[in-house]
Image (tube, rainbow, N blue to C red):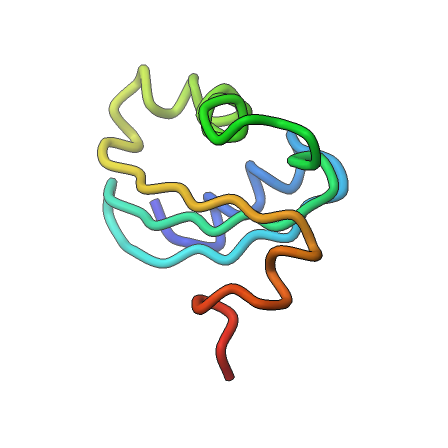
Length: 83
């Protein structure tokens, strides 16, 4: 899979989030930013993203995924957002 394919899957399955994807093959790093994460524990945030990709993980199309999640307010001060 390509990063744009992973992004398209996530955008179509989780509303109101912005995704930044890096990686190639079956190993990807996902940064997800959205109001959907407001009030959720870190574990629940990860589960939300994993659930959106469960079919691709089960099929082996995606193998290793690291996920970082932020609300829009958290993203403003996140080191990953440094320009």
